[in-house]
Length: 339
Image (tube, rainbow, N blue to C red; front, side):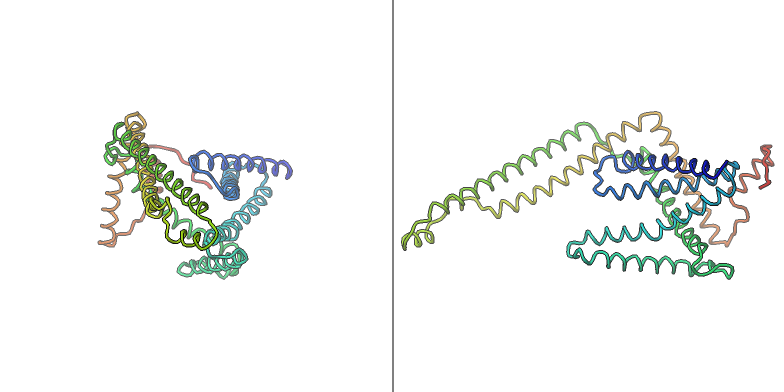
């Protein structure tokens, strides 16, 4: 293939990946929430497209698709682009958004503070590599190998944290044992309480509006001239004083906070009711079984890791290599080991 054809293939695939990231962001990640920053969705789609392109180039390398020089060129361009996004643009933009949400920060100080936050990030990012044997005499301090090595350290750490969270969160969300017993009557009763609270809030707000209107009307009616008008304005009580507006506002604030809690509880009950209905399906029963299986597997791994730490045992063969050995020697699979 020519360089132009290879460029068109990679460009078209990037457009498809960008569209897929855009749809995934809207339909899966934030399908029930309003996205206030279109730039966040754009950056997510760009990063998703670059990541998928890097994975696509690895597959092209294995299959021998596209010209080798073209693959190398697109690999270098994609690598520099995704490193720029991960180290320069995304941290700076995240810091800018965080600082812009601080109320007392002036607009003219946003860019300098965001730049300072990014410099702190770069310093911490560079210091991450100190405990690891990353520096090499073959490569300079500012070479791309130094950056990729630190990105690898951060990526492996984040993947370990996400794996640990998933191992704990998955059984909790999929097993019927952890599901709260909720009936339709519970949901209806909670919705009734929420509606009653909203009605009380509306009634109290109407009383506040009427009291303030009466107070304004009584104040305008007393504007008489002369000394008698001054004495009357001091000695007479307004008709709106029958309602304590301050106390009503405090009551409304408390009821609004209570209504928010009721709303969250109602949403939680709806979600739990949907989970109970989902657990009765074939897919729900399957995930329930998988949850028990992986719970036992996690307990076994914790036990084995404790034994290895106590008795200073070191594994000589990793699980992937061991699985390949079983597949080749015991199950008769023919694996081509030539790379």
